[in-house]
Amino acid sequence: MAIFNLTRRAFVASTAMTLSLGSPAFADGDQVVDSIHFLIPGGAGGGWDGTARGTGEALTKSGLVGKASYENMSGGGGGKAIGYLIENANSNHGTLMVNSTPIVIRSLTGVFPQSFRDLTLVAGTIGDYAALVVDADGPIQDVNGLIEAFNADPNGTAVGGGSVPGGMDHLVAAMVFQAAGADPVAMKYVPYDGGGATMAGLLSGEVQAVSTGFSEAVELAKAGEVRIIGVTAEERVPAYEDAPTMVEQGNDTTFVNWRGFFAAPGLPDDKLVVYQDAIAKMYDTPEWVEVRDRNGWVDIHNPGDDFRTFLENQEQVIGDLMRKLGFL
Image 1 (tube, rainbow, N blue to C red):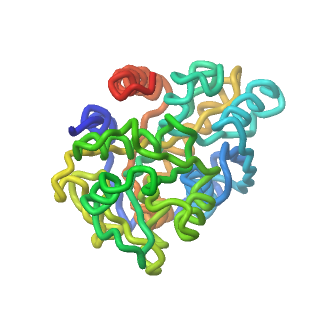
Image 2 (cartoon, rainbow, N blue to C red):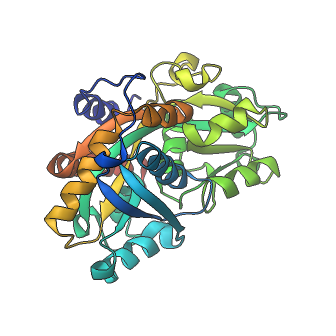
Image 3 (cartoon, one colour):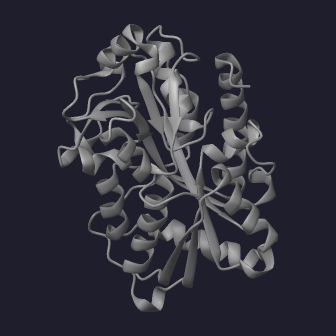
């Protein structure tokens, strides 16, 4: 069930740039933006948090942005931050909010009333594969072992995630279960606020597996705290090649989650242009390459109208999938 291959192809088609480790950092005279305040709709340690802070790191260290600040605003499945950005639009012209596939999913399911159409679209920036993760010291060794445990004891085999029920982490796990012939609706899903809380739930034994972004699990896997039992990439990811793909285990699930940035509605065109310019130039810096490779991200660059076209396409694809799985 290679769902989202269409989405992945859209990523690849939209990314036709060559990066070089030898590219020089930008000098102070090449600074594009004085400062950016990053609004993060979830808790510390999650994919949104890592994307905002990694992007800010690359932009400031390369000299493209003078300084960056960060604010975590959890609540409402991301809706609290979206509502804040819209309600305080005139005072938030220096703010970029990070978001990802969940802004599409949660709008479709009515978790919050807004959609991406209510915001200024700045740019899609990166892609992050999804992963299923277990306790490194636990009995489950691979994806097939997780499915076997579920089939033997559905109520005692819970999967955690950093999204609301019916959200992206839930949806990815359901895709894997369905591809394995297990009932995705019967899967017990436990939601947490952000990646940090999700991993804590796994290590405490509250859940037996976690559906999360690959980048959120890499460092914990390298430290021996968790085992990544499957990645939704078509091939093993260079950032951590010990992690097997779903496909190589006979589970035909591939998926990549975009992440990008939005601004308040009514953002002046000149401000939008400089934000987009800074992000575009970021890709040519060694500081970005270091951040990207450290996290195992995939480069995406969908600015402005291209971003809107992509999101409208994803809304259709995801909506069809969620109806098929019974989430809509």
